[in-house]
Length: 401
Image 1 (cartoon, rainbow, N blue to C red):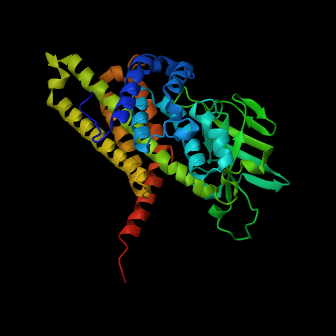
Image 2: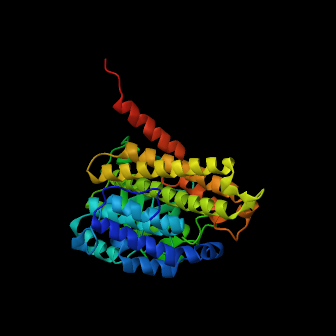
Image 3: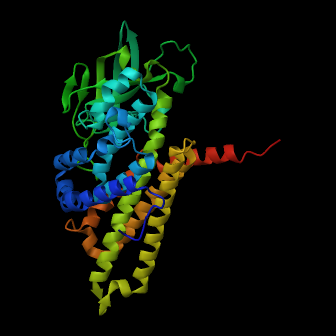
């Protein structure tokens, strides 16, 4: 076990899960990740292996066939997987957010129907808020759901769906004006719909089209897509929680957990970048000695290791706070912000240690260099995190009188 990023106070079950996942990452992910990433190939065998390990049901309660584990266990698992290949952690994360939203807010029928199959990885989840004309401004969404008898008819275009093609269940946020008078605050007139579909691209059910994969700089292997709804009919019993107007709260609860996940991904990628840097620095010689013996390189390694440790501690704190039932938006925002920024910096320092070889596709650090920027914008940009953190601090430290 590495010296950095250890987590104190884990029980035997947690330690066994993490040991199993780390072993899987070392044997099944790291040896093939770069080759798959360069081909932008979906990691089918890796996903099947994670299904067998029960990772898709990690936080789903035991009565639905899951492992019933904590957010902390899940975050530490994601950290390990991201250390192997960040794209794989993305495949799991979106699935997990939908399962979490169902567990917290779904009707009993919705939980009974979806969660057992999600725990087994038979149903795979994705969620959709963003649209082509907006990113972090969720309140400005224009996709609409209009009541028509026992159904809702959905129209609109969504953007940046992770798992858009491979998923079979998408939680889609739309505006619904049903029961909401003119002038209702935008966030109170949104609803989350549970949209079941076929995996694949093209028209995956009547009124629903997944055009194809969006080409990306990094974060390859996982399919990122648009979603187009044109007269898509959804039964009223597929409104999450059975009540319209609650969608914004459902999504924000899911994203809050997702931010801990993104922090965990940042920690995992940073750990891998440090491992690569510290290893290369001991093998590469200049001026008659390993570059690790040059003070300039030792300073870089010291800074990198300190950032890895700090980000891990903040991520663990945010997860534990949510597990204890407390509000954790401040801690999750801080952890996501710090871990993603530090990840970028640690990856860049490792890239610099590699010198010219860091620019070569033969070296793993080249892949990490293209993957790290996604963490700066996923689940809310760094700037959005700072807005959330600032507002929450002003709530906590409001002066009296």
